[in-house]
Amino acid sequence: MFVVKNAWSTLKRHPWRTTLTCIVTLIITTTTVFSTAVVEAADNASGSEYQALKPVVALHRTAATEAKRDGADPDWTKNYLTWTDYTNYATAAQQANLQFSYTLTISMPARQTDKFKAIAGTADQSADKTGGEFTLTGFYTQGAQDSNPAGAITIVDGKALNYDSSNTATDEVLISKAIADANNLKVGDSITVANPTNADTAYTFKIQGIYTYNDTAASGEGSDAKLAKDNRDNAIYMTYTAFAGSNLDTSDGTGWSIPDLDIQFTLNSAADYDTFVKAVEDAKLPDTYEIVSSTLTDYKASIAPLESLANGMRIARIVVLVLGGLALLALVIVSMRHRTSELGTALTVGMTRGRMGRQFMLEVLIPTFLGFLLGMLVAGFATNPLAKALVNHDAPVSFGLLLHVFWYALATYVVLSCIVVGRAAAFRTTTLFAPREYASALLENTDDDATTGDSASTSVDTSAEDSGTTVDTENSDSNVESTDATVAHDSEEA
Image (cartoon, rainbow, N blue to C red; front, side, top):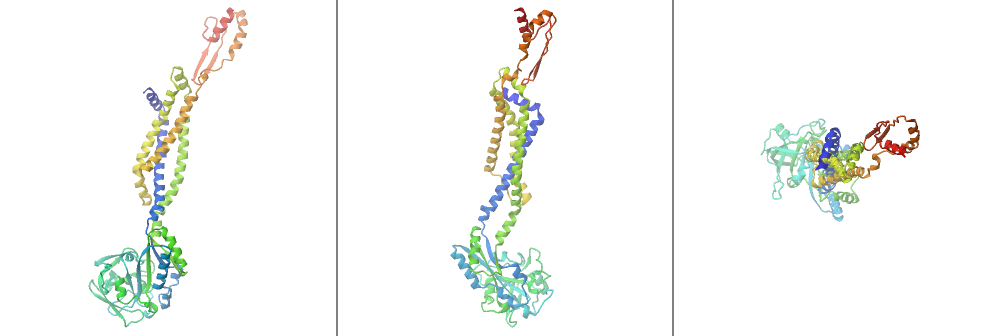
């Protein structure tokens, strides 16, 4: 208890140093916990969480190819992939020991009729060139609809499409609210469109639902579209069953009656993506196509801010640990620098080096432990909310992380304790008194002092550097106080 009281008294005598030690430790702890949590979250996001994804992979025309697209040129359909092409790619993937599921989207233009008009484009051309003013699009599953390149939709009236395998209806479709309003149509009404290459072939459907898009149209796909069929509000959505049931999925079509087939493969893991890419490329995918995965692309974009923050925190953690460690070391050294007299006095009155060492260890432990405890509490509660606010991603603080930081803190305390204990252990009591080199000279001059009878006045300034005490001794004929004066007196009597 005596050691604890002494340590506490010392800390109270130096409040600025105690407070600064606590603050430095708090900053180190908080930064370490937050940075480690962010780095772990980034590593998990780009590692195990990334590999756990089931990427949807598609074969799309390259941007350069799409830039050359001419919606008024029926020969453009030569750039489409066919069922035969996709079968070859799927076979190649299976031969590479990949397992996958698939869905598809299929589309083709359709002509407007007298009773059902499309929203006009800004530079429309004859349907004989463009294939028509509408676009018929069939989805194989709800997943295909959710991946609709034109954008996600919401049903504002009526019912959504039914993708259940038991549904054999071939006439149920969705139309946009813009088209419904323009044609004064409602759910349950019938619409008729014509074949893109043969205006005499008509298809009649029943409106099952009316939709709107959840986002703004991309440039050239909204009201600014040059051709009416490129305006996404002119899209008529249906199930693949309805599309194929209307004989629209044909392999012997010509021009715009050739459907644009887009099959999406769902792989079991992100690790399968590279294998799939190699297999399909080896199966001679045309140069006009590229393999893309919106799943992986979107995911990487979502964790990019987290990875950027993690890279910054890796550097910040090193800087804080180095500078903070040096600051703590400097504070400890300063606290020991002017303790020589205290050490000397304590050892002189019988206090052991061990007790002094324990006192010094407590002086290090108390402020660092307080700073560490506060830092753990602050970081534990604030890390995840702060990460969510900064990068919209979780950065949980696990027990393992806190334990990891605790061991680092303990190691730091051990190092600092070794320094202060070493100071007590290395202290030499011989340094309490300075060497008295003047004694011999004083004895040699004893006879001269006796003959003259004059009073001898000797000023001895003994500076005990370790104890911080100065002893001044003046000796005269009538008053001799120093040990050296006594030695001189004994010599004179001899």
